[in-house]
Each structure stands twice: as C-alpha cells, then as structure tokens.
Length: 228
Ligand SMILES: Nc1ncnc2c1ncn2[C@@H]1O[C@H](COP(=O)(O)OP(=O)(O)OP(=O)(O)O)[C@@H](O)[C@H]1O
Image (cartoon, rainbow, N blue to C red; front, side, top):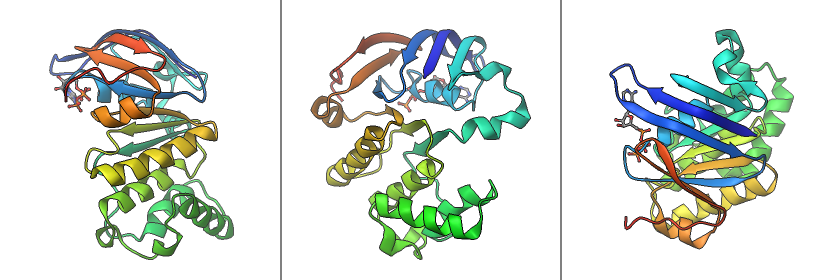
C-alpha cells in the first residue's frame, strides 16, 4: 500500500516537480503514470523508492513513512521495492546470472539458494538459456527482462517501472508488458510510468495523469489521453 498526502517536491535548484500530490494505491494494483515530459512522473516514483524525500507532505510505503526512515534502514526498506528503468542499467561486465545473483549476495543468501532462486527467476522471464551471457550479447528486450528478473528476485511488494518499454520496438514492448502483467497477477503492485499510448489504451488499468506536478486525472480503467 502506497499513500501520499499533500506531497511537494522542490529540487535544490528551485524546480518544483510535485505540487500537492494526494493518492492512495492498494496492494496488487497496476497503475500507469502518464503525462507530458517533465510533468513529475519520475519524481513521483523516486519518492516511493525513497531516492528523494519530499520537501513537504507524507509518504507511506509498506507501512513505513519514508521521511522517518534512518539512512541505515533505507536498504532494508528498498528490498521490498523493485525498480526497472528505460535504459536497463545492468552491470556490463557481469553475466546475466551475476547481475541477478548480486542482489541476493548482498543479503547473504547461501550459494545453493542463490543458484536456485536466480534460475527460477530467469525461467520466469524466459531467459534460462542466457544465464552466461553478458548484457552486450543480448537484445534490448532481453536486457530488460534481465533487469526485471533482478528487480523481482526478492519478491518485492512493489515494482516501479519507469518507461520500461521506452527503448524497445512495439513487439518487444508487448513481451515486457505481458511479463509485468504476470508479476502483477502474483500480487505485486506495479507502478509504470509510460509514454505508450498503445499499451495504455489496449491493456486497460488505472491511469494517473500528472501535469506540472499535480494529479489531473485518476481513472480506474483509463485512457492515455495525450496525442503522443
Ligand atoms: N535532480 C533534479 N534536479 C533538479 N530538477 C530536476 C531533477 N530531476 C527532475 N527535475 C525537474 O523536475 C521536473 C519533473 O521531472 P521528472 O523527471 O519527474 O518528469 P517526468 O514526468 O518523469 O518526465 P519524462 O516523461 O520526460 O521522463 C522537471 O522540470 C525536471 O527538469
């Protein structure tokens, strides 16, 4: 469950990215975040992941108020939130297997469990046969699937996807979308910032539209609502 009450975010350079956000997202929802470039979508997701702390207002994620978290508690808090980005952000010199195992090694899993869990999640995203490849040897869609596998390895309650199909062709975008839907069907809340009119208008979900840092539309089975 994610709750924002009267949230404002002004960056140190004086730019106001969020200007009074009030929203509640239940466990298991699938939400599209839409709106023009610079509207505040990424800032909205960064506040959930506690990459940014709002200048004003209250943000509660998984029963934790983010502004009250101590620095030492942030890694543990983030373990329950997966994030994927438009540009994949895989470690280029590590194999697919290592990119994912890394997220488990830092929490001191046993080698046997790591192997079991990494292979299971690779199976889930259809990449079991690419475990020994490095990111450069994969297509964009495959790299995004690795990034998704890494993001869900700890079974997070929330998965943030910030324009996950932004660098992919339409067919590959649909593959990624179907994987996200499968993850959502298992109970993970998905927050997906997107500029894909086609996806939003085809796979109907809750749509939250942000413009100039405020929510201008929040519809249960919404439309994209913009021309591009
Ligand atoms: N670290 C930062 N420091 C200063 N200003 C920032 C920072 N990050 C974002 N901004 C500004 O905050 C506003 C909102 O940006 P944000 O990235 O949240 O928008 P967005 O809706 O995700 O845009 P896009 O669709 O282009 O990704 C913009 O005016 C942007 O320039």
